[in-house]
Length: 333
Length: 241
Ligand SMILES: Nc1ncnc2c1ncn2[C@@H]1O[C@H](COP(=O)(O)OP(=O)(O)OP(=O)(O)O)[C@@H](O)[C@H]1O
Ligand SMILES: [Mg+2]
Image (cartoon, helix red, strand yellow):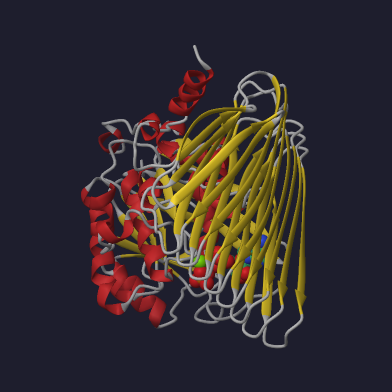
């Protein structure tokens, strides 16, 4: 089996759609380790990628006013137990452009794998970018994931990013995102992570609301069990008139897990406003009892609450509810 | 034998007793209204029957279908067919109304449950049971969720609280639906028109049921403050100490 086949197989198993590779209207890039397996650019989106000794460099550019209706799919992974993948990516959306990126990252067999992402992103004036990144890790916890991004948003630009690592062991995760937003730009950074075993999670996200009426939200959802640890640092600066920022961090801890949240707020303009909320603790008691009054066991209730927090909807498969005996009402008489 | 039998139930919070040798029986298929002033212990009784954490009787016994349930954890009582729609229902991030109503049970008709509580399935099935629902919407969804369970006994803790006046009738119809489906209802309410749907009613005061009978009689007793036990004095007394 070729490496491409192997990666496609993993994609299939995760509910991905391999037909996108053949779709001439859909841009994509697939890389396994430092091998570039497949790529396609489409009119208005230029994609230039090359292999390096330990990874890939990619330059992606969406031309002015080009609004792509099909998302760009990025598929990265290291399939063997040992390996390294260093992605250097530069992404530019010119003025008025629009792009959705869906990134899949697979490390199903990782025992000693490192995945480093260095991204420089520029979203031009009136341009719009969404970046959804889903990680699928194996059960061994032998992955180190280090995503770094420096993002600059032009006037009225919109940037939504959603990072999720809720399948398999995290291993070591060290996210470092910095976003600077110009006038009336809107940014939303969401991260959802589920840590198990001895997983170590560190998320540092910094938002600089530099332009007038720039708006930003940092939303972090973390669930931890066993001996996992998480350190969440959210930084928001409000440096201009009517800049509005909010940070919202929720962490659920079980067993011996340890979580911390450190919101840092800096406001340098009297008409800027930055707020934050953080809740760290065990599963909410009232939520638990509500679900248990519906017949869920404590374990099922925790799974459902944590799943919801992490943005997963898995009730159909997870929960088995005992059927009510057909003659229950008559028995009662 | 009644479906639910509460015998001599006592429960105290740090400062004072809330329930004091309370007796109550609910027959299968009966709608039983429970009235009483704020803080008399109606919700406390609900939590004791349901088996919420921290609500263990100091004295007395609760039997369901003849079986003592005092030692059963909450979810096992639920699995026997007891459920509770909370006075203040919890909110859940990332849980859709559809999933909340079905909780993995394929046979549930979530759309029908929503319709019965006056919410359009098209608008609400995909909504989240989170902070974005209004108070009244959340109450209705709670009612729909227990309806979906087809419980043998449901405790409705102020189901019309936060419901607009135009829709009270709808909620009363839902209460009747539990009954037509063979379920019993313990209906905690402050509204007289709601008690009228009940087959029987009881008034709680000073930790005990002080008046029990047809809803009109109990409503008259309650309104006239003619509580046999405290003669109108304890009903609005905070009874500290
Ligand atoms: N853990 C507690 N500690 C102290 N007091 C408590 C505790 N739990 C309940 N109480 C008190 O017990 C009393 C009964 O409360 P409960 O919620 O059962 O009242 P209720 O009849 O449902 O009132 P309402 O009509 O306002 O809903 C109240 O005075 C309440 O403050
Ligand atoms: Mg109450």
